[in-house]
Image (tube, rainbow, N blue to C red; front, side, top):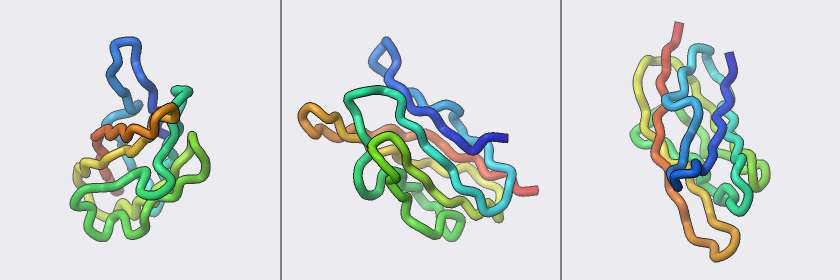
Amino acid sequence: MSNKVTITLGNDGQWVCSPDPIPVREANVNLTFLLSTPGYSFASTNAIVVHDGGSEFPDPSVTKDATTAKLRDKNSKAGRFKYDVNLVRDSDKRPVVIDPTIENQPK
């Protein structure tokens, strides 16, 4: 199973994270977020921020480069976690926030 999320801007102007929700079944995994729309970049810090993640997401996300960010998920308890993807439009540095879901499904 892949722990990768692809982020694209649709022809209708709506941002899409695929998959959404992210099904996480393995313990202690790194989720990788890949931005595939030119003209946008991940925020240099806090590119991925989980709301009410408690101890499931103990570390802040790491922005590897403009199109790749990573987040560690302990996945020790089941639950659905809303998170923000924080992007920046390159042309004017306008922030873009997307709010998909992570679904922890530990074995």
